[in-house]
Length: 94
Picture 1 (cartoon, helix red, strand yellow):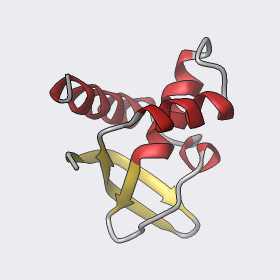
Picture 2 (picture 1 turned 180 degrees about the vertical axis):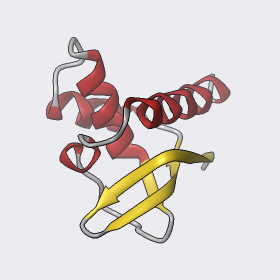
Picture 3 (picture 1 turned 45 degrees about the vertical axis):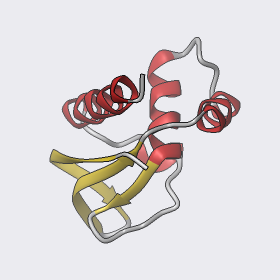
């Protein structure tokens, strides 16, 4: 399974902790289907966030599970870093 660890500039806050990196795995068809059940694919930002939640392996020592709601407070810069990482994983799998 291909994974990529993405350093975050601002971090992901879960409870009282702020995590400074996230590890994502390459998505499978089921992840796309599950993300689309969480939010319509026509809503690009919400769908990409739901997909990131599906394929997130860990945030530093936090191993999930992750939800769309947990990622809502990400800074746009960190969202872009995660999106770039997800795109790289998808491209590597082609």
